[in-house]
Image (cartoon, rainbow, N blue to C red):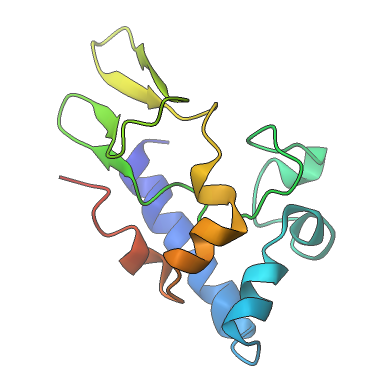
Length: 130
């Protein structure tokens, strides 16, 4: 699946869950998206949950901003808007340069989620595509 279809699919899934949890305060909603809680209570939200596998190697991982507000997709490449020192790139056979975010934990820290919080995930991610 390419970036845009995944983005659209995830936005729908995220909205459905946030709507179901509308009774929670912002802090409670952010806490609900803790990896351990999501694995237990929302096993179908992410393909990695079935394996109890984190996308990033960090003790406390928050899944609210799955994908990253700093991730940019252009015509020939994807990049990091903040040039994270923990990022990198991979060039595919067709020459597309993919941003490798696997070493970056920025969007999965609760403090970052709170700073960039919006119940509309798609709005937070609105700058992802050029």
